[in-house]
Image 1 (cartoon, rainbow, N blue to C red):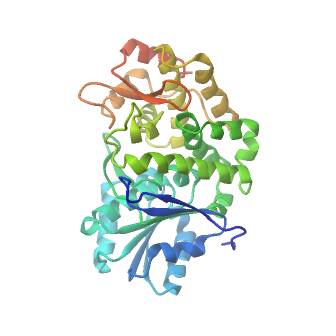
Image 2 (spheres, one colour):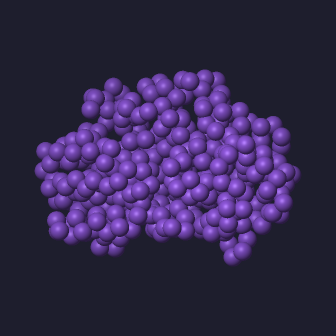
Image 3 (cartoon, rainbow, N blue to C red):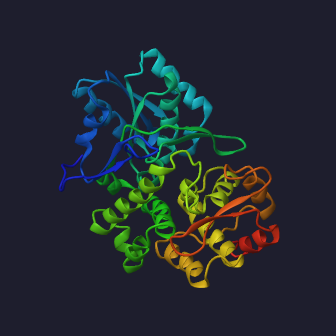
Length: 373
C-alpha cells in the first residue's frame, strides 16, 4: 500500500434533512490508513469479507486492523456473482456466530460490487443489522455498488431479487488499488460513470469525450474527477430517495440510477453472469436511448451520443447473445416492473431522467434490433 500523495476528498451523504443516515465517502490515492477511523472505537471484532482473488489484500487488511487492536477475522467468498448466493451468506453468518459477533461489531468488505452487495446483505441481516464499511477495489464498485446502501443476492429467477437497504458506516475509495486492475475492469466501471453523465452531470461526458484514454488512466486528475463526480451524482439522488420510493417534481428519484439496467440484468442472467456488468449496462443504455427516441422522448443527437461516448472507452454497444423473447421474459420480473407493466428509465433530454411505463412491445422489439448484432 502506498502513502497518500494528496489528502482524500470527503464526500458526505445524508444528514438531518435527508432520507439517508450521514456517513462519509473518502476518495483519494493511498488512503487505506483511514480505515480504522471508519470502523470506529466501539467495535471489538471485525470481519473482513473478500473474494478469493483478493486473498492477499484481504489478509493484509485483516492484519492491519489487528495491529490497531481489533479481533479481525478474514472471510473468503467466491469471486464475482458466484458470491451472491444464499449458501455463501449462510457461511458468513456461521463465521460471525462462531466468533461471537455482537451488534457493536463491524463487517468490512474488500472487493468489487458483488462483494459489497453480498457483504452488505450479511451485515444487514446479522442480528438485524450491524455496521458495515466498504472498501471497494474496482471502479464500478467505487462509483456504484459501495455507495447508497443497496444490498442483495441473486436467485435462479434473477439478479438482486433478495436484498435490503442497509447504509454503510463509511466507504473508503483508495484510488491506488485501481492500478492493479485489468484494463477491461476499468472499462467496465466506466459504464456506470458515463451513466451518471447522461442522467445528471453532463460534465462527465465532456471529460470523457475530450480524452477517453486519459479518462481510463489511473493516477490522472481526470479519472479522479470522474470518480468524485459520479459519486456525487449518486449521493445527491440517494440522499432524498434512499429506498427508491419515488422522486419529486417529475424526477424518478433513485430509480434514475437504474438507467440501462433493465435490459442489462436480463443479459447478465442469460449469460450466466459471465458477462461483465458494465458491458451489459452499456448495451442497456444504448437500448433505452433508442427506445426513448422511437417513443418521441429523446432527440437523435443525444441518442447517438450514447453510442459514441460508450464506444470511445471500449464499451460494447451491441449484443449478439440471447434472443429477444428470452430477454423480454426476464425483464418482466425486473424489480422496476409494476403489476404487468414494464417500466424503463429513459431520458426526456440530457440530464432529464423519466419513466416510460408500459411501452408497446413492437416498439421494444424495434429498439432491441438496434443493439442486436
